[in-house]
Amino acid sequence: MSKLVSKWNYPTTVRFGAGRISELPDALAATGIKKPLFVTDPGLAKLPVVASTLKILDDAKIPYGVFSDVKPNPVESNLTAGIAAFKAGKHDGVIAFGGGSALDLGKLIAFQAGQTRPVWDFEDIGDWWTRADADAIAPIIAVPTTAGTGSEVGRAGVVTHEATHTKKVIFHPKMLPAIVIADPELTTGMPPFITAGTGMDAFAHCLEAYCAPGYHPMADGIAVEGMRLVLENLPKAYANGKDLTARAHMMSAAAMGATAFQKGLGAIHSMSHPIGALYDTHHGMTNAVFMPYVLAFNREAIEDRIVRLTGYLGIKGGFDGFAKSVLKLRKELKVPHTLPELIKGLDMDKKRKTLIADMAVVDPTAGGNPVKLTKKAASTLLDNAIEGT
Ligand code: NAD
Image 1: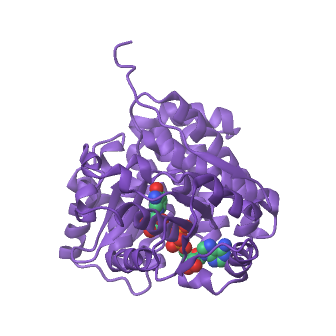
Image 2: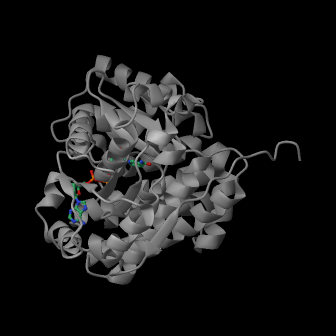
């Protein structure tokens, strides 16, 4: 029994359901935010989903500012500009509205605007988060418009350190949004590629959390049901973006994946992070490319767990049956099978491959992989994902 020691954290208030974006003024009042900065990305800023949300604020006569200089895979300069906008507008809280990129950047603006140390001092390493002035963190309302990262229920934000091209995870418990409005109607405009990539991200979170070593039966239970929801609903949401029931289940699965991955992630993410930072690929889609290669690599350590999982999912054929289901799902969603199919014109020399393997083994997610991710293993996984073997 002595090994059964763990720490469990559970998410925040989630107002879940179609149409609940109309509760945004009430959520602001509940969190005491009087002059929010609305953080979104430039693509979304042009879509009706943003216009109709801002109209809700206008109708409620809530003063606000808009910051939309957030690139997919946000970078340090986006954060610097966002903090400047927050301070210039004398804002007292953030509405983070969008996919993982806008959610993360919104959370990071609310966190970092009141700090005196550089953001890199709060990387998710040991207890670095205790260096922060927790009272200076502004409240956050998170409104996801994709269903994948689960950043809305998470206590971290991902931002790329531009000088080194590395994705850094910044962590603080108070970066957890005070209220989440999870309205699946906001996701119905997602194009198929983003639907597939974000949905596979949710699946990767559940799968890696479930396979991570450590004692966390609650995370395991959440991850298992999250995977069932993705397998049953992602193909439906992909085929018909307006299928609100499928969109709602995917939104749940995304939040479940992020809740589960407090247990740990693994080599899918460790490999995907350097690729995303160096080639600016979509995070979830990159995870989806690596998934079968990492599954095969981890087989010995996870076979029993996966066989137990297949019982719940109703998949026949044990580990091989599960691996086939993953391949089938990827095919249905037109996920590229190899990195060269994902990154057109990819030409990786030996030096670049070594750099990626070096980055993968020090990625914070590597420690959660059930088999030790050595440099040699990371190189092999990279070769597999390039050659499709
Ligand atoms: P994203 O936020 O980068 O968005 C991708 C694209 O989809 C953008 O062009 C955006 O404009 C568009 N989009 C978003 N919602 C839309 C909608 N409803 N309709 C039409 N278009 C829409 O993608 P993402 O996958 O949600 O987020 C990826 C980011 O999240 C990466 O930076 C990744 O590192 C990070 N991430 C964070 C966590 C975390 O725990 N904080 C976890 C996983 C990933």
